[in-house]
Length: 180
Image 1: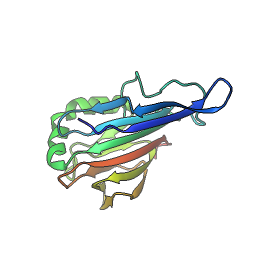
Image 2: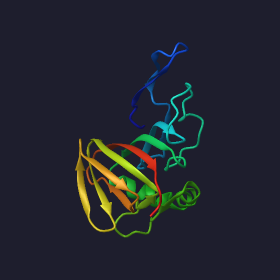
Image 3: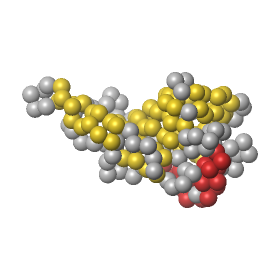
Image 4: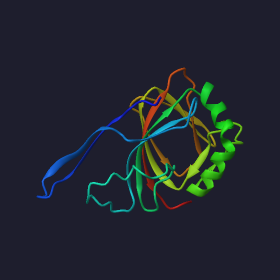
């Protein structure tokens, strides 16, 4: 079962005063099963500039997809299990995920010999390691990231490799970007 993340959301009341509109576990959690990544969607915007009107939760009642909407953004936490479990899960689900990837607007590279988790999106991503450690892999090179480290991902082909025995938790902000 994925780790629960508390999400506190602010807004405005009818008088225009700042208020808390929700406080509790993030409701949109996608557990893909044993060995697979778990994704907790924290917030999403559908345009830039974003609208702060209303109280509707943009993470509820929508199918989960990797990239944000066109001109939008996503804020999420991803739990990366150890590669000793995850790599097998990626291979087991790769045909279904490849079909979903194309329809969602990103490209998977499961056949990549370095790691089957390689993929590319038309986004700029800000990744923050919350706990654990993980390798960020590029077509050429890799770097070990530990808790507190930040990576700015600029629409490049990449993968995440957790070579430990414990999960790694990363927070991501994904913003729609012009493809290269």
